[in-house]
Image 1 (cartoon, helix red, strand yellow):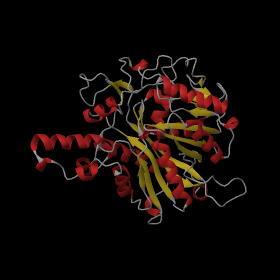
Image 2: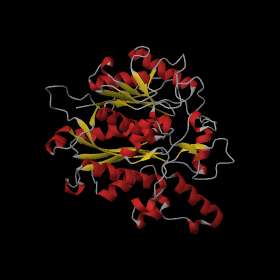
Image 3: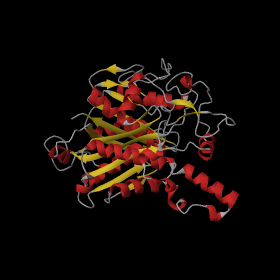
Image 4: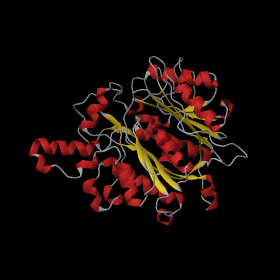
Length: 415
């Protein structure tokens, strides 16, 4: 059974029937930088945020490295009334959403009452909050479980809290497709823009760096057991032996190109193409997702200037991705980068952070590097960007694979 794009292809030159979607605001929380510009500068410097876990005692576990967002002080970003009812991931999401809305330069309160909404991606929900309440239940009794547990753990809680805080009462939702979720959420937001929404906050932020979350990560047996942060996560490397988990992600303000032009907004780029596929038995379909996304954007493979790879950091998965890229672009036919090598894989936040990197690459005409991997393995024929590369960038392709067979691809384009 196959799946295809969630949206019809955008109208091309001369046709105005379909509204184009552009990004006018970006917010970021990442292990190597809090805030969009701080993160981007660190990424271009090749600074990693992967280090020993500090959020809990990981000394008894076989994996002790993670990408943690450092320097985030909850009280500086949230009113005190929200602290008892929110998980770490929701606090990060609220801060990132505020940055994106401030960055876009519009006041949500001035929009039509139901003209703006929120679509986010989540893989774990409020995992740490849930762990605390389970501990209280079994150690102290049910009367010690917070009433906020009824929603603080839920996958949709980030969408809900962002909506409430900023009065975004339009069509909203959440998608759960693991690492692919960030792209899927933006695609759903694009659909709402095409239906007439004035503004959408969208993307993904995730965090499950707690003992309960760690047990879930370890159960999949896909994590690197390396103890050297610089050698733990090596996309496309012959020595790749698993990935590192991280927290954080990015959220965006999406508007129609018409609305952005009318208010003379600063535009980072357009979300011009998207597709999703699902793997069949023994049939990986990431390449199909990439081809469908290019068709949706109306661009050919020769027009793509960079690919932000899924970069699983596992030999078989990296080889499959490299082969899919070679089939579409030719061996080493397009620059490929994986800045997530500096943050770890952020679950639903990972693809969103790649979208932010793609948009800033369009803005600054520079490709961010992949760290750790000096030379791709012989069976991974990709032109891997291992140092910042100044080059014309018009169209970027972002790829993401979620555990269980989800594949998503998106094209970001300069205007």
